[in-house]
Image (tube, protein in one colour):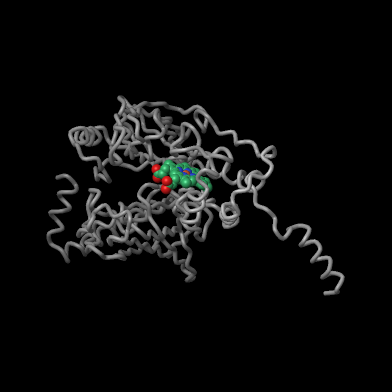
Length: 452
Ligand code: HEC
């Protein structure tokens, strides 16, 4: 390089990036906070305080630096994987560095007259008018204080014909107490049974229930935007089913009554492809003999499944209770290359998101899916509900555990649906058989869980 060029380069570098460029709220931090935080941190939303002005953010500067550095905020548990996720809330390394630098430098205001405008947050139904609007039949009372409450609430539908659901938008009446909600469809009889049990029970924790007619319809965590399933895909809502919502309520210091309004968006016609789930380990690890000794820091279970046909994967999600830690799924392609579909290093029960891929991912026949779930049952795990830690078994209560990663897919060719489903069911049966061979008391447990 000629000397003149070196000189020019040096000159431009200095001009474009003055050595001590000051990171200011107005120019650098406000655009990040308004886009990444204010959606939840504003009046009427779920976060406990607003982040809408210099003072709001500066008042909690140290805490903001800490929760962003540890990636507790914005809530988004998935590490970057081999494929991009839609609407990722994760801060880029650059955004994170800017916040850290600003707090370290004493949080300079900059020119507050040049502050960017707050975004226009959508009000009302975000996907337009729904095809059907239903409401919780009665309000649910959330006390001012106490532990979080998990509750199934039934919303009767009385649909005369089957429908195809493309999106559900749930609008809480007291947004602050609703942390997240999982959606299910269940046949009316099964749903009524669960409702009666819930109303009779005083326990504040309900988790997965295995009723035969239940189908998962997704869910929403605070601050999440409702999405229409891509490519005309939709989930079947059989006739004579009710909606079952599993609510996670979070007391806020003030008594509240929650009565949500729910908007359903139906596809005009049945989709060309049928969505199905591949959950590994199967049945949330029920057949894995989960038994975690107190103090055990890294108890792991694994499961694998080889795809019998080409599939398109559209989303991935995980479920565990409080002491779940690592949730991982990889795909090993027939050519040997390995891709990561989900990588959660520090599971947090509070944020049960599903992660949608930017584009459907083609996983060819012969691809092996491997999943891994781990738990930390030591007393150095701040999320451990048992102090001191106790022996933890598979089960539905807070002190019990379960865990799995599930991939939402459709067969690339609809003609292969039965083959995909029956091969997966075969894997479930084989896993169950193996377990019963090892542990003959398992049959009784299965009967108990299936409720007959
Ligand atoms: C999806 C909604 C959402 C987004 C986006 C979000 N927050 Fe939060 N934030 C919450 C909720 C809800 C809480 C209350 C904690 C809880 O209930 O788990 C919270 C709590 C906090 C706290 C208090 C933590 C503590 O330990 O007391 C800070 C600080 C915070 N958020 C900062 C941020 C910052 C900075 C951003 C953006 C970079 C952000 N949040 C983005 C929902 C959100």
